[in-house]
Image 1 (spheres, rainbow, N blue to C red):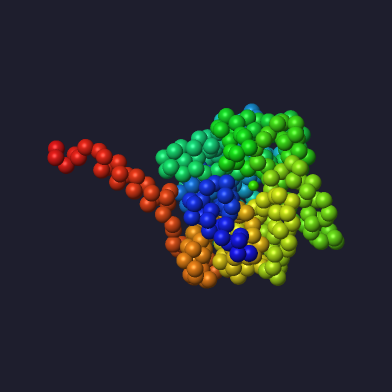
Image 2: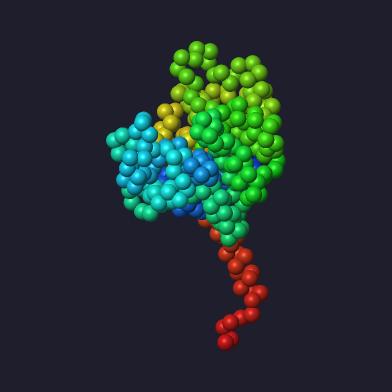
Length: 380
Ligand code: CA
């Protein structure tokens, strides 16, 4: 336990290199504050110090990869008003039935239940407000590259290839298209700050062994089905070692890492023994997991007790602040983390003591150096 804490402190003191554990992954952006998968939400996540920023990717009718969580458009856009009658027999409107030009006309909104229209997270950005749009994968990567350049930070990307088998049924092979865009933006290669994630294990094997992708891969896993009687299936003999032949880590739900009793399930220890990283999803301060009564309790269980390598969160600012506070407490020899302004379970989100954005102190130092070197304008 001590050595893991020490390693975490050293990583944090070293300045949060994007490859170093533990990492904060902005889940669909800073989704706790702005609508998911919008460029403003991604820019905010960058500003909040996320180490990695997630993109979920689906294809348009003209085979352009766009950043959307669902293959449907109903829960996060105004498609029903903009394109009435363009839904399929199941009543849903699908991104793949629209060209990019058509999708560009849609307004993106905070997520709503598509049948009731009720906002899923009532405390978040009000649904239907603002003017948010769908971005292509290339556009988003350009924005993040630009922000890295202008802030001096290096932020990783965490693209998920959505439903490759379904895309094939619709006549499109999504993986090579996505990988090409990633390559064009410098995100290929073993050491690139990029994790490609997918729920489809067959597709991940294809990406690794047939499509020649050398970059990091994450096998996403869902909840253990209630009817599964044998305990955690990933703890079965050989299961994790088998995954490690293809992927670099796993992305399980929080509940497969910490049990309802608040204790680690053993999955992280077993995954580490197999050489796999563990990045569970999704920590939401306004919808805490059953094992925690506060965000602080959840983060302690995940990072300190279970030892996860990173976390998907809708609140990157809260998680980065917590990790920094923890590192600071460790390095000063205090055994307790000072109480933080973190959201209580079920309660409103309290203001967070934001850390300097963009390593702002460094930025000011650099600016002061530049000013010193520049010819003084004051004499003019
Ligand atoms: Ca995802």
